[in-house]
Image 1 (cartoon, helix red, strand yellow):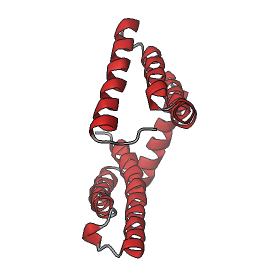
Image 2: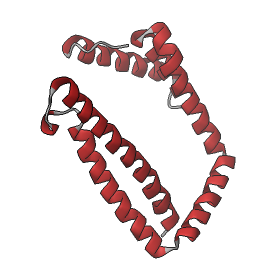
Image 3: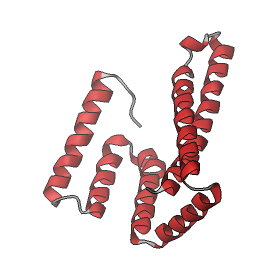
Image 4: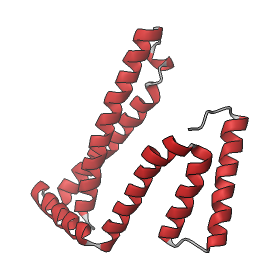
Length: 161
């Protein structure tokens, strides 16, 4: 068993759950102030409920991991694991993938819109991952964008970027 993995996961999800809870409460307060909505009609209800569940599970996971190894042991193993990960080739690939995703969201989408930016993003990303042949990548990208456009833009009338 590797309690330090549970320890890191618990800490991460406690932070995320706290952020979600504060955001959900903010959504509720904003909706209440603007539209006089009760909590059960508020857009903040679902994030609040999910974050409470996430916080409960994360705290239980943290308690379990600290019972298996002390807080300091978990923290030290987590730091050692993080140091090893940062030096690994997987971390470099992950950083490149995250950078490419950020470029897609902040550069390609605003410049070219969904229909042009998304196939470019998908093709480059799948080539980077060496997912399959170029022909299959082009087919998958085209079908993904086409179906997404039809379902969301035409059927659900969602405005795509």
